[in-house]
Length: 296
Length: 89
Image (tube, rainbow over all chains, first blue to last red; front, side, top):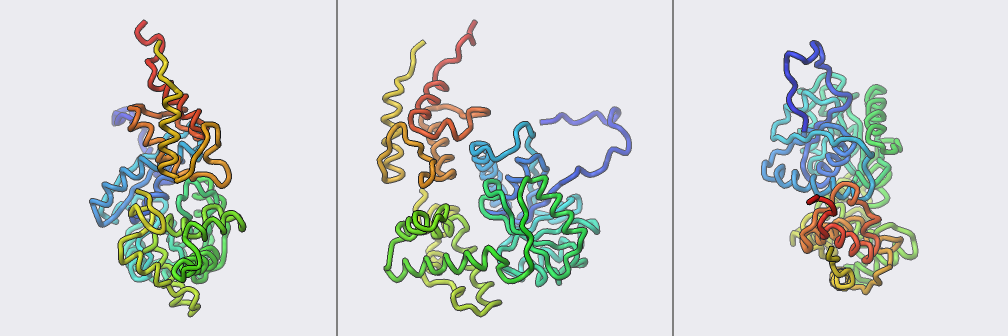
């Protein structure tokens, strides 16, 4: 930890903001993962959540996940960790060079949070929504300056997955696109930019597949283990769709499928009854200790 | 210097892994090779070793290569448990 500098020896006018300083909104699975990615690359992060207890739990999770990132050699060598601050006020966003919104996958909640943040940040600040399915332009309408919003869809865990999907909305400006590219470079992520649409590319393809995998289990065709074993062993999927579901969080998956179903009319995106039942039973995947698999 | 019995360690670790994964492993099998265990499981193994053997895995020791096989895990535990040489002059 750095000692506080003596104000008499601090150079005058040295109050320019750091090159990148993130405010992350939402201390759920993705908010925590994105925070770990940023801290591990030396960027300071202010993590905001309305729930103080969740913030306290997040601080422990962040320590553990930083160790996991280190274990996997996923952090740049010799880079000191960024400083973490946590708090319950959105006002922290005023000091950020970029704000990453990672709250619940619900268009109304995301729009409300982004609208408030848009009124707090300096004009020109990059605003990122980490939505997995909601069209970026739908959320941009809530902002004072819609051109500042970009979608990034980080996968969990973001510090172990080297590629991120970047979504350019119809109103996203060139300045925001350049800013997100610079940020992802600082985070050593490869960006693949796609057009705006419900579910973009990854969720549009992956989520109905996971939904079908759940239906296969529900119908008794195979166990979750066997579905994953076939998708891994025959088709080269790295973990299998149902382990992926547990990693995403079943509640988030259902929210995301609902967003897709409402916006595409694709019946394949209507959440499978088994997924809904797991959510009702509190079996949300890794984060709750149990989902398709037991992690306790 | 008394060396902790790595053979006993290996046996304990193999039992732990079999209990957690439902699969029997050899002391020399690369657990995280293709089709093997996940990185998230690797972290659980690290935490288990720290708790069970009262060690702290830090700095350069915290890398997957030290946990790839039961043999390497046992070597690491033995090294971290052994009193550091030369510390008391």
